[in-house]
Structure formats: C-alpha cells, structure tokens
Image 1 (cartoon, one colour):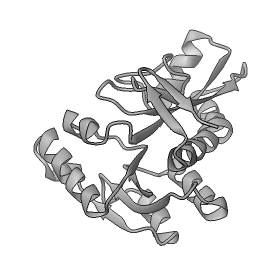
Image 2 (spheres, one colour):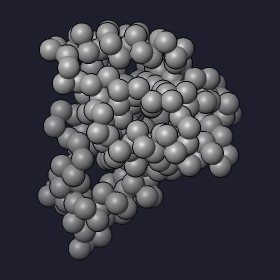
Image 3 (cartoon, one colour):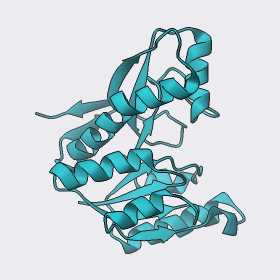
Length: 207
C-alpha cells in the first residue's frame, strides 16, 4: 500500500513513522512520497535520509485553496497514493480533497478529541488551552480527516498525565513522546493491514 506523508515543518511525527517503518515495517505499507507545502521544511531532509522521494507543492505559489488542492491531488495521483498521513501539514485543503480520499487520510492531534480541537487549535496553543482549563489528563488522537477540522472518526487515542509544573513546551514534548509517536505508526499499520472499518462516527478495529 502506497503511503504519502504531507508536511510543512520539522516533521517530528514523520520521524517516528520513518523509524517504525525502518525497524519493523508498517503492515505492508510503503512510504512512497513526502510532500511538503514549503521548500524549507526540515521534514524533507528527514525523508532524504531514508531515501523517501520528496515533492514540494509550495502553497505560496497558488492564489487560492482549490488550485492548491488540485495541484496536491495531481502529485498524489502520480505516485498512486492509497493512504495519506498528515504530519504537521499546515494547509487547509479544499473539500474535494476529503471527498477524493474519504477514510484514507489520517491525522494526529495533540489532545483527546473532542477536547481542545477544531479551528485555531494547533501546536502549543492546544497545550496552553489544556493547562489553562486545568484538566489533569490530556493526550493525543489519531483520526480520519473530514471537511470538519479535527471532526473525523477517531482511530486511536492515548492519555498522558499533566504535571503541576508543566509548561506548554514540556507538555508538548511529553505528549509527543508518550502518545503521538506511538499511536500514529500503530494506526498506519492497522490501516495497511486492512483492520480498520468506519461505521458512522465509529472506527471498528478488526482482530
């Protein structure tokens, strides 16, 4: 199964995926493309180290969302991509993207959806919101992508305790290490093994 990873920045989750891919595989999945919205994304260097083909579809060169979405989809089609993993991909795509790849786009969000998610919740803002609210537990969620931001069916979640002296930065790191870097590769493997079925809002994991 051909996998494309879409990136915009450093690609820490992408690195976790690459490490798992190299060490134990992804259930028959093969990372055939790292597509970046920026030519300066460090994730491109991570891809090159693992001999993963790279493409840049620079968001700044497109005047509107639909033309950019079309360009990205054309690139994905040229690699016969069957699964798309969003790894810090900071571009909002057109509705045609979600329709074309329905239940074939996976994203990881650094909170336990439906908490601290949706428009405007990204990066350190998510962790700051959790700390401001005073919750004792946060975590990460891997979900299928729909037109609603962070609103798609949940595949996997993992909880992480919040400590009293946490800052957004320390919490972000712990959530990545204890949750994101574990459940993203796991969800990709489940997909590639054909073990995920979507029934309404629920994702069924087959034995």
